[in-house]
Image (tube, rainbow, N blue to C red; front, side):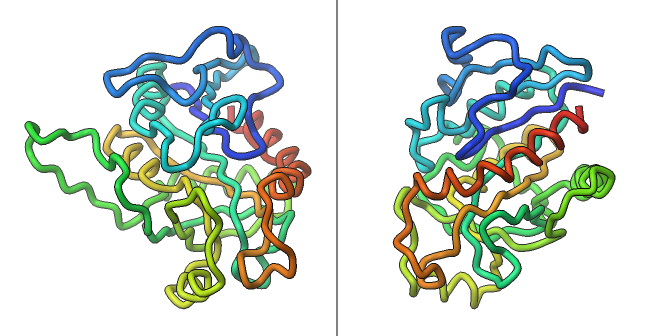
Amino acid sequence: MGLLGVIGGSGLYGLDDQTGSAEAGLADTPWGPTSGPLVTSASGGGIAFIARHGVDHSIAPHRVNYRANIHALREAGCDRILAVASVGGMRPQCVPGALVVPDQLVDYTWGREMTFHEESDPVVHPDFTDPYSPRWRGDVIDRLHGLGFDFIDGGTYAAVQGPRFETAAEIRRLAGDGCDIVGMTGMPEAILAREAGLDYAAVCPVGNLAAGISPDELEMGKVIAAVGPVMERVTALIADLA
C-alpha cells in the first residue's frame, strides 16, 4: 500500500508528527509549485501532507494550484487522498462542530484548470458517478465508527467559486438543488484525483451555518475558530488511517 495523501484545508495547516517545514520549499511540478511544502509523517504508515491554502492561509480557493498538489502527492507515492475541507451547513444536522463525510457533489465553479489533459492530448471523459471513491470512503467511515466519533455519513457538497461567501439567495438555490454543505475547494480537486488514478475521499468540518441561515455575519476567522475542536477528531482519524 502506498502513502496516505492528506490535503489540509482551512484550520489544518500541518500535522504534529511531520518532518520538514515551510522552509523546505514548495514542490515543483509540470503545472507549477504546490500550495505548500509536501511534508511527510515521521510515524509509521506514512503520510504525505500539503496545506491547500498554504501554511499561512495566503492562497484563495480559486487560485489553489490543484493540479500541482495532486501531481505531487502521486509522485510522492500516494495511492489515496483524504481531503480535509471546512464547509458551511445548509441542513439542520449540519451545524458548526459537526463532521460530514460527503458522498456526492455538485460543481458550481468556473474558470479553474479542471484536467491534466491538455489540448494536444486525446479527449478524456472520466466516469464521475461517484466523485468520492466508494471503497476508500467506506474505509474512512469504518475508522470513524471504530474511533467512536460522531459524524454525518453522506451528504452532497456544493463546490462554489469563492473567495466570497454566498448570498442568501444562492444558498436557497443550492439547498433546492439538493446540497447539504457548501465549500470552495471540492472541485477540481476530486476530478483531478480521479484522473491521476488516486482514491479520494473528504471529511468536512462544519464551521458555520450558511448565509441566510446563520444569524450572524460570516467571518473567516470565526469559521476557523469553530472548526478547531473538530480538527482534533480529524487528526486522530488521519493517524488511525495511516
